[in-house]
Image (tube, rainbow, N blue to C red):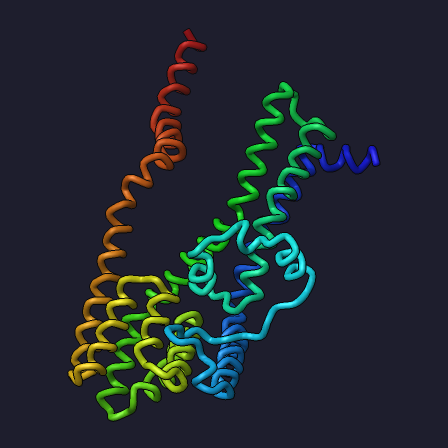
Length: 326
């Protein structure tokens, strides 16, 4: 036990573990880019299963005013704990269901998992903080500072699941919006070729998978909901709610109005494709404009010292040689 404690408290060992984790994350990132086709097949299979499940259910079984796909009930230890402690009401968040959908998690199981980890994470973070501060005593802090650090760990554990979900939402939204204008162009071509909107959306979802798996999944769900929901407007609204982006919401509204008032759908898609392309360009220009300010600190810390050494180094050496000879 003493050897284990010395091992996990040795700064060199902790540094080695950190480097190992970073190397593993790098390798995992490189491998994930090579397995995008496998991920696309799995997600499309899941979407196909949801489509079949939605097809089997009658339209009367779908709740009025909601277009979400229905799933079987969740079971297991996490579900039992959430129900016993009534965590759904204790940690109630009206936006969590939409946030989970925006992150790509659908159904009751991810929601139960979120509430479970939101309840368990503060205790886990507290146990780790107490172990390192009071048992191992890796830092020589006053008792009140240690207690404050433990309380901070509890707060961090409470918000850790939210931060994880928000990070997933940001990455998923960025992937969707990167390929969304191209998807609208493909959709416009399919509609002008005479395809129905359901067939066009289904075709685009198959073609856009190489650029964005997330967008292909969303378009496949849109195609399924357009086919089986009692009101097509609900399918467009669900797409806007799942992505929660102004560009996608404007496209959903335009397509709803085109079907409601009989206006040409191709004209609306052409305008929306142009607007989303301009949104993507403005976002790129915004990042480019913020780049000089972001590079200021790295330049001061890393570039300027090297320049000073390169420029002043020879002069200092000459002065030292001159003074040594004198």
